[in-house]
Length: 494
Ligand SMILES: *[C@@H]1O[C@H](CO)[C@@H](O)[C@H](O)[C@H]1NC(C)=O
Ligand SMILES: *[C@@H]1O[C@H](CO)[C@@H](O)[C@H](O)[C@H]1NC(C)=O
Ligand SMILES: *[C@@H]1O[C@H](CO)[C@@H](O)[C@H](O)[C@H]1NC(C)=O
Ligand SMILES: *[C@@H]1O[C@H](CO)[C@@H](O)[C@H](O)[C@H]1NC(C)=O
Ligand SMILES: *[C@@H]1O[C@H](CO)[C@@H](O)[C@H](O)[C@H]1NC(C)=O
Ligand SMILES: *[C@@H]1O[C@H](CO)[C@@H](O)[C@H](O)[C@H]1NC(C)=O
Ligand SMILES: *[C@@H]1O[C@H](CO)[C@@H](O)[C@H](O)[C@H]1NC(C)=O
Ligand SMILES: *[C@@H]1O[C@H](CO)[C@@H](O)[C@H](O)[C@H]1NC(C)=O
Ligand SMILES: *[C@@H]1O[C@H](CO)[C@@H](O)[C@H](O)[C@H]1NC(C)=O
Ligand SMILES: *[C@@H]1O[C@H](CO)[C@@H](O)[C@H](O)[C@H]1NC(C)=O
Ligand SMILES: *[C@@H]1O[C@H](CO)[C@@H](O)[C@H](O)[C@H]1NC(C)=O
Ligand SMILES: *[C@@H]1O[C@H](CO)[C@@H](O)[C@H](O)[C@H]1NC(C)=O
Image (cartoon, rainbow, N blue to C red; front, side, top):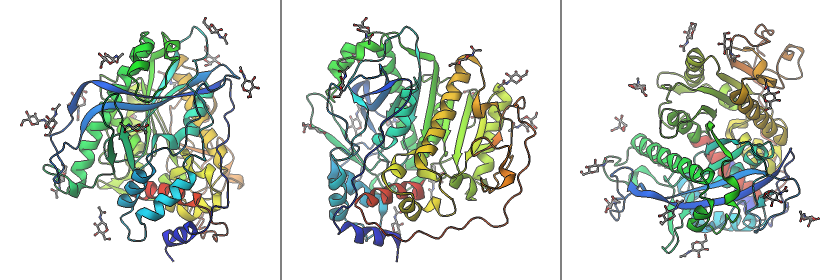
């Protein structure tokens, strides 16, 4: 039976698990505010229109992001906790149905499944609270999400970074690559933007998916530029105006961001399609990123940009590095390695590495909301991977990210970044084997500065056959399992 069909059978049963996201631990508490404000100059990013009604496909009207930031420990929300899946459930469901492109997946089923989790899973951050007091400016990460996914699905990674002092803006793109999102502007009717297919669009897309993706990339890049503009307004002391212009009814403490954002250490990051965008945006002088942080750069979101002069950190998941993928006549792994190497040659500091025990969705919240056996069952990229503990995996992504921020701030290499290359090519490793000695907490380092402390770490012996883990039997049916299907689609499409 197709895994999707199993999931759909589960949908007919009552929910049996109550799921929640773990609270954050770190030096700081975690604040969260949603900001949606009009762009300065509303514009069409390209001239492509929908064939059905002549409406522009990429009209940039507002920019929308979730801002995670450090707050004083013990600070309490002044607004309701943010739901993990908010409104409009029906539109998100319909977007998933379109992207699934399968007759097994119907609007009614997906809607019902989402409705049962919508509202019950909350993001454990303190909504609309003041930034922690202090005089120093804080590092900033701009984060572009993957295909299909919504901004809320990266809440653990972003929140844990904030608990460590990094201000993180997770952008919800309106480029038609997400399941569904609503454009809200004060005193105007809401506008929904649902997952696009190339066949819905006129020239020059006219059914050409590659062309559509390139136009989506231009749109996403413009949204990143606008996010930077809003953050600059905040640090320039215009938090009050941003609050007034915010159609999401939050931001009463935004003035606390005055002079607190460190644009000298702005990092452009993202996951999957968003990682492709992050590499592209490094060449954009109006974003002016200091460095790039690209998790699992896209395999089907067009060519990857390598023409930039900043340092990059590229942490791959095990499934991303291990699965051979043809990419414009080369292997995807080799292309990414070359990007990191050429950045290393130009800047003296860039890294490409793989975290063992991870699948493509490991940086999202999904593995925390379902049992690992369910994730193994539904995320096609995880089939040959022995998945590690989901919370530990996210923590490792957070740790390497904060080490990167520290390096950018004062040049100190700590933790994983002290290592030299341990595995020039990806090798299948069982972490319990003795040949895994010399690896840093499950990381294989493919590209690193040669002055690393472990430049001559032991060369691992490849295991003869990849671990092939048969899918775990589905013993527990839960509507939440549907969310995993959703994320599995993300994994299989990009
Ligand atoms: C955007 O494109 C649409 C359709 O082509 C057009 O009607 C509209 O005037 C354009 N808007 C702007 C601000 O250029
Ligand atoms: C859209 O079309 C107009 C008129 O043909 C042209 O001037 C403009 O450059 C086009 N914009 C883009 C983004 O291609
Ligand atoms: C925050 O809420 C908790 C639990 O309701 C309460 O014990 C604590 O005193 C509150 N903290 C502040 C600073 O109000
Ligand atoms: C949807 O599935 C059909 C049948 O499998 C296929 O022909 C079509 O190309 C798919 N459409 C997209 C947009 O992937
Ligand atoms: C932070 O600073 C503000 C303004 O100076 C002050 O009102 C507030 O009490 C301070 N909060 C803490 C937790 O120190
Ligand atoms: C827009 O959607 C929000 C919920 O996302 C809702 O609160 C608001 O009332 C809607 N506005 C209009 C004009 O429909
Ligand atoms: C689709 O668009 C891409 C990028 O614009 C172009 O290189 C390619 O030739 C197009 N494919 C077809 C079949 O027209
Ligand atoms: C807020 O909106 C007004 C009116 O649209 C605009 O003039 C102003 O520049 C905006 N302020 C900021 C800080 O974006
Ligand atoms: C690389 O970027 C520079 C400046 O940003 C530009 O002049 C050059 O043409 C680009 N090279 C390629 C191959 O795209
Ligand atoms: C980086 O520099 C090394 C040593 O000079 C050279 O062998 C390698 O080809 C360069 N790699 C890239 C991708 O530029
Ligand atoms: C490695 O050493 C070179 C030459 O001393 C230096 O330029 C570079 O900044 C160092 N890189 C790191 C990451 O410490
Ligand atoms: C660099 O900053 C980190 C904290 O971000 C600190 O622990 C370390 O001591 C600093 N190193 C130097 C050389 O200042």
